[in-house]
Image (cartoon, rainbow, N blue to C red; front, top):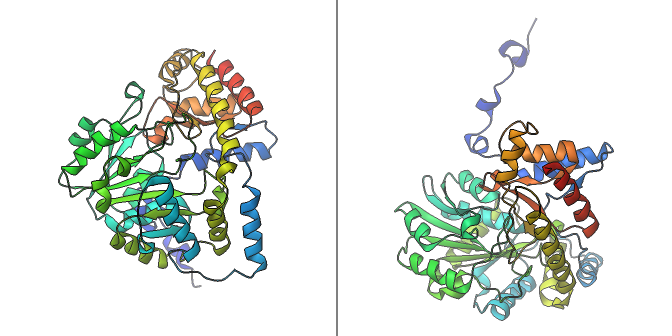
Length: 412
């Protein structure tokens, strides 16, 4: 009797089937923890999720109205890969009016969320063995995206003692002849740290000495401004970097449009064109309806951002004050974004010594908080910073009070 290949040869070894590329990276920890918390919630547990990084506000009505009108008008076909002309013009105008940058339409691309623009950038400029400088704590995907591009992430630790900011001396020491790209994210996910203009100028002076290094500035949290200080990025500080700087942004955070999946980037035309070619072979255009909505967001009244940021500032102060009153935690005030990133090394040591957690790690602490106290946080090691954890305060004050009460009980 004939036998099937699976019966005669046995089960395939997954490691021999899956690519080395996919085996070199891990699932996004924030999404994994959010999924686990969601599963527990459906099972009836009273989970408070502080892991996901998205505003708890609805998309403003005028943006939704623009999307509905586009649907009714039949704007449901393919668009140009790099974005509809109206949205690209709105992006050019945004950069000019808000940031003082002059870009042509062929220097702008619209992608399926900010993550895709970063992905396309890395695939467009990185070769095997190239080095990418990533200050830590860093957004979870930077290092893994570099790995997918077969590059080498060079992680530079920037702890709480230095305000989670890279120093010029650290940047200089990290640059080698193999360095191809430097990633900077301000305001930062996960820490909320914001570089001053003077700090950016100092980093820019280092980069000017190394013309082989490209610069990517991720400004996704530009409008989630907790301090009230004027936003600036490294291109504002060092305009001479423009011919090798890519500015990355999107509508997800400022306009509470995470699910609409629209990011955009601006930079040298030849790099943007390479990103467009990649996108033409992957997703093609971003969703037509979402592009119309994003155009309405950029061109419409910006007052819709104010209530959200006002609420974030109130929550931010509450969260930081509470964390700093808890045993074993230390938390800095952030300049932007909607995260708190407390140093929990003291608390972890105390809980491990007391036998409350199985290991002296932030992962063990996160599991303890979720399994025993029904609070979902993201361990700092996911961001390249062992001993910390991140919470999002983009949730109601009631949720924050209840969650922090539980964390306080857990730490006692």
